[in-house]
Each structure stands twice: as structure tokens, then as C-alpha cells.
Length: 460
Image (tube, rainbow, N blue to C red; front, side):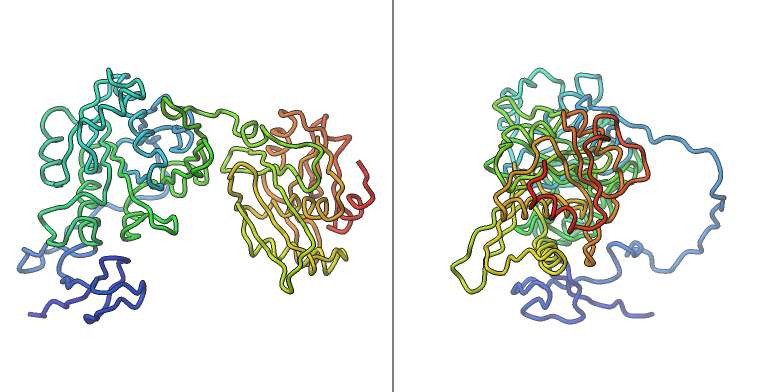
């Protein structure tokens, strides 16, 4: 009989080592390697089987056939339903991550109360707070009268025994997965082994009973969900709850969804009585815009299927240093370096003796390359001291040759700009017909140099 192989797993980052060492080669943490046999865990069968049983044949089918929509539980909170793709899917597991104090528990408490008021059985299990603390939050949110069932427990076996007593719950919220522990693993709660085993047990319960399970996860200082990344692969959807501490709005961003679109966002505003939905986030991001200041350009972006308008601010100032500063907030710093290089190489705009500061107003973060044109316009506007037209939006990707490339979802971007009163657009050449209000004032440059010449000439 073959001897089971022993491996050592880092309890901090989850890296597998063939032999024990005092320091993990991946994350650099000391004394975090724990011995673990390969006979159990994910990807292996039960340890109690002395001999392998003969497998049974399963039925094979084709790709064509009837398709049933996933049964969903709509919460009535439109921004949350948008991020999840229409509501919680029965029998699915969803992972929600976010910084401490960002509002994860507040959002889930409001969602639990809304679903319970609609006649669903909702169970909220907290491993971090006592029942009295949850009741205080519910009173502050005005949800104390909702028939949500509460419990404060961290043992997985006790939780499963509790929720199995009575009717099947429609939604189970576990706050958080890092506090749970199971009798099957001997390590401390929060370690890689415990998090993986607890998540596997709860996901198995969701798949076998049809109950939707929401797991709350802590995040690291880098903004990633703490624990093994295998948990993100096991669940059906991963949501990140983002926001800046000095801003009152929060963004619920979808990064994985097996039952709906990804890269969707839901926007909320944090207040004294909890989270309030923001149906039109563009008005929120443009609410305090200065229309006559140079160095500000309005970018028409996309978040999943939702168009969002945000203001990009640039400040170009003479530098007293030999190496000028380059500071970016809300955008990719490497992308800024590329735009600056293209402006210098193909447009003759020199930034080598200037400090460059770039900021996305309101703490909003932009990841798509369509913001290149808006960034370039803001940089040239700040350098020349000429304000851009207040009723103009910008979007388009800049190539290394200086050409302006087309981007996806241009009609949706233009419709959002038209709805908010913008009458001009600077964008790549499009094959689609422009809206009537934007057709007369639109400018479609083939090269970035055309836009730079237009801004430098002060053409409005």
C-alpha cells in the first residue's frame, strides 16, 4: 500500500511546500508552515476508505437542450440586485469582501431585513459580534421589527445542526468566514485549513438544500480577500464592497458571477440610517465640478453594463527637482506614464520639467483604457492653462503610435452624456450614428495630435 505523501501549507498565504521550513518562501512569514496529509481536503476522497470503490457510469448529454433560468430571490434593493445579476440565486454561495468598517454588515443586515419582510426565512449568523450588537445595528437601520433569525456561533457543525432544524432557510448569512472553525481540522480559526474546510462545508450545504449562502470575508492590506484564493474559486460569485474613508458613498463591485455579468457595480451612499441607493452615480461624481478650472475633463466610462461619468483632474506644475513627481489617485500609474510618453513623442508636449498630479474626483477608480483621451485632454489643459468646454465628454484609447482607437459601448456612453445635458463629445471615429444633441458638437480625431492642437488653440 502506497504511503500517503506529507506536505506543508503556509497558514498565511496558502503556498504548498514539500518540506518544512521556518520561513515561507512566498510571503516571507515565519513559523506558518503546518503539516498536512494529502489523503484529505479538496481534490481527494474520504480518508476512511480502505480500498477504492468501483466507479459508476454517469449519463452524458449534449450542449443543446432546454435551459432554465436560475431561480433568484430579489431583495428589492435595486443596486444590490444589479450587482448580483438580479438577486441571490438559490443554492449558490456568494463571497462579499471589503475593508473593515466599510459597511458590509450594514448592507447585509438591510438585505436580510428586506427579504424577511417579503416572507423569506433569513438566518444571520455572526462570529464577530454578539446578538445584542446586531440588534443595536438593526434598531439604527430601522429594521428591528423584521423577522430575521439571529445567532452568534463559530462552530460549523453547530451552525449546520441549528439551520437544519425547521424549514429550509432561503438565505444564510455568515459573518465572517475567517471566524468559523470545524472539528475536522485541528488548526486555529482563520488559518488556511480552517477557512477552506469551513467554506467547503457551507457550500456543500447550499448545493444540497437550495439555500443561498452569503460569506463575508476579510481583506488584506492589499485589498484582496484574506485566506486561500481557492475559496474564491469555490463560490459562485465574488463581490467587493469598496469606498474611501473620507467619502460618503460606497461601491459594490462584482468581480465574479457564474449566474450573471461581471464588472457590474452598485452605488450606495452611507448615512446615519444606513446605506441609501444612488440610482444615478454620474450626478454624484459630477456634483461638485468646477466648470471653468483648467485641467478637468469629464470621462464617459462603463462599469459592466452601466455608463458612469466621472471627472478627471490633472495638475501640471514646474518641478524644482531633477526627477519630477508623478502622483496618481484612482488610475493606473503605468498608464499615465504611457500617455505622457505619447504626448511628448508624437505631439511635442514636454512634461520632463514638470510635476504631474492626476486624480479621479470623488475617490472613484477607473480601470478601463478608454480614459486615455480624457487624461490626455486634462494634462494638456492644465499645462496650457486653458479650460476645456464644460459641456464636453471624452473617451477613447490612445495607442503608442499616437492614434486614437475605438472602444466598446460607445452608444451607451453618449446616451448617458446626453441625459446629463452634455452637448459635445471627443471620441474615436464611430460607425454608429450619434445622438442628435451630440452630433453637431462632436469631434472625432484620428490622432492625439489633432486634439492637442485644438486645445492649444483655445477652440471651444
